[in-house]
Length: 254
Image 1 (cartoon, one colour):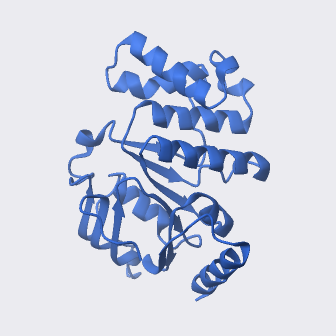
Image 2 (cartoon, rainbow, N blue to C red; image 1 turned 90 degrees about the vertical axis):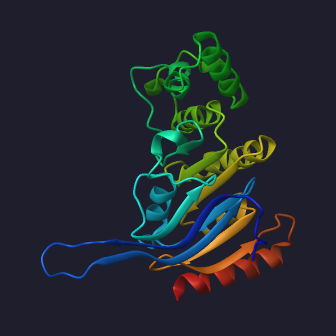
């Protein structure tokens, strides 16, 4: 278990989320009595099978929906009630790159900075810095259709880092990529999160991806409650990693 932080970046306190159904059908419980605290600077891999409530948790933390009961706090505030106050404080990397096809790579990265009313010169220099950091120096003026899937996702990551948000929310951002491309981006993304002192929540259904990117792994069972919660040391031996994989497989099969 992770030791509690004096100042958690994200806190879910006895959170439940229930969705009603039409007619006499019973309500669907997506999250039930979840307690989860994420300290500042942690890279949390949130792992679970499809339908276990990962995306519901993601949406509550992002302020897109409110819990049915309990409290969700991000940096001490309510992201749903005070949604506008979190603009620029959280950034999201989606499963698909969600680039605007009529804007160049540079213009796509500038988008979040435009929303924050940053001056044009600052927008351009910041966007250029992050695209160059992510290996796209020669593609600043390329449109999305001219970029590979991996390159488009690099633009998406650059866009998230450009706004300098304290918290990054990542919803299976590499699942649509081939494994070689995804592997390289995982390593690079984890390095950037750590070197820039960000807090990140990374949703995945892949055990290997969770082991590759998380310094803490939380495994969820349905409805979303914690089955396993442990800090992961990437220097552990292959034998230890295989033991962890077995623990996770057992929890997911339960």
